[in-house]
Length: 305
Image (cartoon, rainbow, N blue to C red; front, side):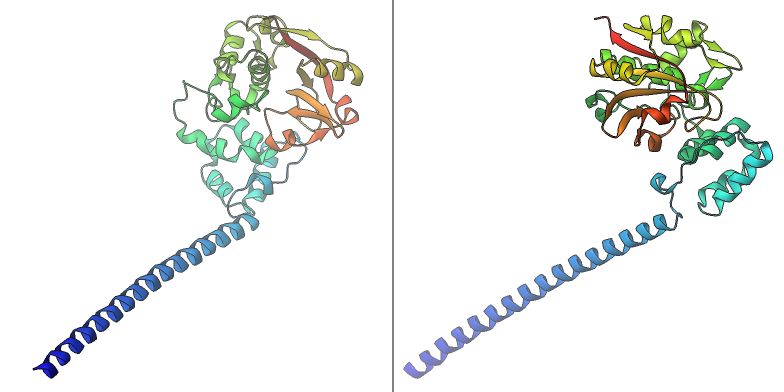
């Protein structure tokens, strides 16, 4: 009897030991599955990242930093098409535009030939959405003088005279940056300033924005604009006082015809520019010598409040 009892006890111990081993094996298998899944996901993520990186490096996926920003030039219709065909060899997105070439306004195509940053904006022309309620982003609200791009889809398709803000609205866009930087008026977005400019007669057909918008028009938004001498020290004095500057530009690095840019500061490398037509040019510091020969007129601004 005692012997049978001991055998029964050993059997229970053996079974408990078997169960513990089974649990350990199940746990090891579970951990192994989790590690395998994690490793597969890591490999998949790495592979996708490498593919995307490679495509961008080959310019198959558009990446504005890969676009070579050249000096704007005036082109004939034939030259515009030739330039876009050249770009299509490097960036397949241009092929979509070439396939529907006749559906795009000539001025949009000419602008794209000069500025590859406008690719998505021009592509979006055919299915543009209502953007009547343009608002600033949280990031823009945190910046002293945020860069507003005239062809931003929030307002770029809005009409401006016989054109659109994206094509001809550099003046109102620059003034919008100044107004927000000095007054924090979130309602003075480029579309609102452009509408005011048009309604008050500051848009001149065939020319663009009248210089009077930079002084008379600016006063309606609580800022005062005064003409400034084209002198490096004078510009730096105004910027040191917290007064941003708007420049009317002639043909050169920024435009093939006429353009407005904003200057918000300077450092040892040069003046810090907000070009409403180019993020790339806004990331570059410009020396006085580079800007001097291209500036037709300039105004400095301060808030009346």
